[in-house]
Image (cartoon, rainbow, N blue to C red; front, side, top):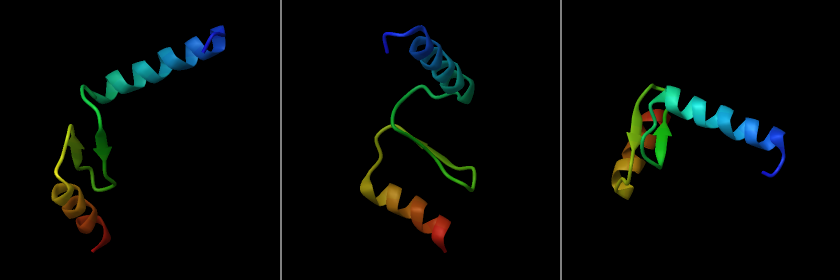
Length: 54
């Protein structure tokens, strides 16, 4: 991102992330409003996905 346009896009994305309150990665936002952040066990991720598909 050497152009001014690229820098502006990066700043906009960083602003969006800060507004969302994201402080760690990865962060998973689900349609039901639940959020999982940071490292999660595979079982936890599968359980979250199962609740969305049932």
